[in-house]
Length: 211
Image 1 (cartoon, rainbow, N blue to C red):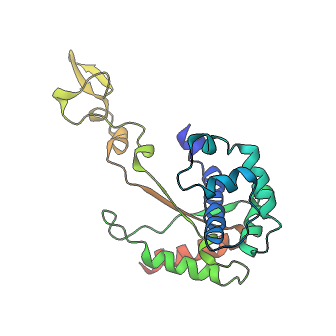
Image 2 (tube, rainbow, N blue to C red; image 1 turned 30 degrees about the vertical axis):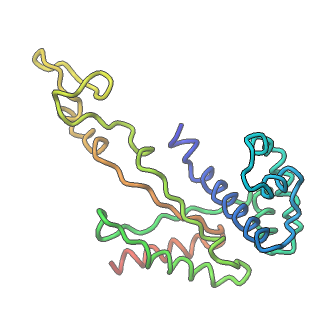
Image 3 (tube, rainbow, N blue to C red; image 1 turned 135 degrees about the vertical axis):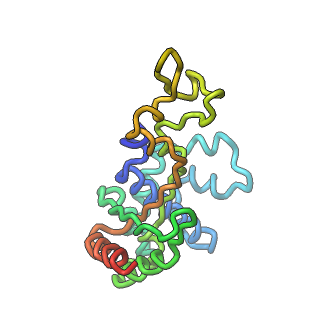
């Protein structure tokens, strides 16, 4: 479910779009701009310490109405992303090129280059809203991670086979399972407008060729 639903690129893309929408509206609101808030959200943002009931009152239909309000807002990026969300005009996912040092990956230069690509379209302003990063915790990429010490393995933390009347952890027998038992790293992806996707893939290919 995590790999095919919760962490699917389409699902995460819309989640990142909602995230930048919320941050943009909150920033405008905090700077004194009217962001056409529905009463429930206006009370929530106006409270110094929102109560649990105020939080629970923000249901799906409430937020959808709020996004509909934002489609007519004067702030172009807020109205554009609100429209994109409601019309299911999703962002496209682009993975970063592999870092030379995977133990300590550096994506600073790549992020800057990707942001420069977004800046080539004047309508994508501010560009940061059209290039959000998504970092998925490594624990969600860990389908099987057994206890390493044989004397600490059990039916709860390892899959074992009976070999010569002794229980043996399965990846020590089946070599193809060993990659699954390695400590995974956080997964990083970026989301950009679909019309920039081909240019971003070309940029990544050139990046790999130069490395």
